[in-house]
Each structure stands twice: as C-alpha cells, then as structure tokens.
Length: 251
Ligand SMILES: C[S@@+](CC[C@H](N)C(=O)[O-])C[C@H]1O[C@@H](n2cnc3c(N)ncnc32)[C@H](O)[C@@H]1O
Image (cartoon, rainbow, N blue to C red; front, side, top):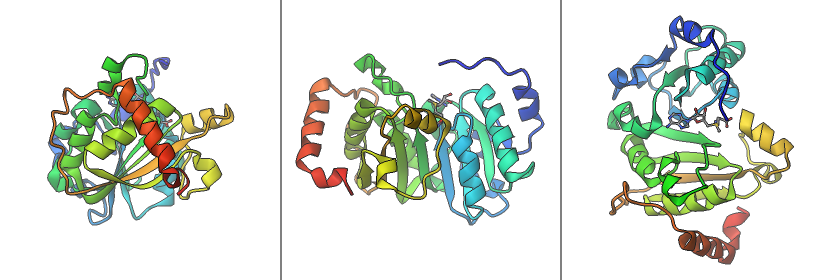
C-alpha cells in the first residue's frame, strides 16, 4: 500500500532536531544522543506513522527510543504524532530515516540495544524468494544480534500467520529463545501493549494478532544467512511442532 506524497513532511522533518537521515555518523554512540544516555535503549524497525511509538515514548520517559523507517512521508506523520504526545522537544525519542536492510551500518555493538520492536512488517508471503525482504529474516536477525545486548529481546507482532510461523524458525536458528508466545494477543491481555495503526486496522477486521518475545542467547548462527529461505515443508513442520507443544501457544 503506497501512501500519497506529503509535501509538508520533508520540510517539517528537516526542521526537527530529533530527526536524522544520517544514522551512520551516530553508529556506536546513539546513547549519547539522548538527554539520559544511561536509560535503556529500544529500537523500532519500520515504525510507520508512529502511532504506537508516540504512546510508548510518552508512557515510558525512562526509556530511550529510536524509531526507524524508510519513508520520509510516514516519518513526517510519526513526527506529528510524537509531537502531539510528547511536545516539540521530546528527550527520549529520535526518528531515523534508514533502510533497515543495512541497519548494521547504523547501529554497532557499543550501542548495546536492550530491545528491538518489529510491528506488522510487510509479510512478503507471495513468493519464497521474497522472504529475504522480511524484517525478521535471518539476514536481518544476524544484523540485529550485532547491536543487541546479550539477553536483549525482540518484540514482534503481526497479523500474518505465515510470516509468524516462518519467523519462529528464523528466531530459533539465529540463536533467540522464545520467552513469550501467543496467537491472540488481545485475548491474552498481555501488557504493556501499544496499539499501532496496522494493529488497529487488523483488529477491527477481526484478525487475531500474533505476538512473541525472543531473547538473544549466546549461540551464534552457523549458516549463511544470505542464502536462507524457508520452504513450505519447513513451515508445515513448524506448525505441527507447535501443535505438539501446545503450551507455547497459550503462555
Ligand atoms: C506495514 S507498515 C507497519 C507500520 C507500523 N509498524 C504499524 O504497525 O502500523 C511497515 C513499515 O515498514 C517500513 N519498511 C519496510 N521495509 C523497510 C526497510 N527495509 N527499511 C525501513 N523501513 C521499512 C515501511 O515504510 C512501513 O512504514
């Protein structure tokens, strides 16, 4: 779905002190960009219009957030949503325009992120060869591992069953352990949950939201992430494994 170009977005972003297109120059020193460098650092990948970003940052002044997206048009909306929730000078939020496919050019080991948030990334389910574009694909997860603390977490939610099941395999083989997993987030009542624009849309359509928390372990992935793609057979196997381990579905 393409968004109509917003003429006001780029000028407003250019005038915004808490927006950057030059993430690479802050690599390994992101924490110093905040009023309180000692606070936990949470990174949101593909924040879109920042509806949940604004809620999260307002609710958690003791956490620093970097919210990244490729599109200046949606980041323009995110800036307005955040300014409405946090005022014109939030001390705990930076908006970043960057291509997450190359995100290890922007964040390094010394940034030591505590959490990565991925909400409703594009599922890329039409053809297996497109799977590598997913923000949860192993070629992304190995990058995230490089700037996520040991024990740091990825919080992932989606409406899409195929993306979710495939991602469970991705997390598993990339050295992340499952801490929490639920196939209907709203029925489970998990908190805190900050509802994003897409979450609202899918919830209104009656689609259950799948959600998991995956923790980085010491195990390094031992295969070539650039070549990995999930086959339908692997997906089927994952589903039956999950059915056998039904307790995972209702934690
Ligand atoms: C379906 S929207 C979800 C937005 C928001 N997280 C939500 O839940 O409403 C996916 C977002 O990811 C962004 N995105 C997709 N691929 C990206 C990439 N490689 N780098 C940066 N952003 C990307 C898109 O621009 C879009 O804003």
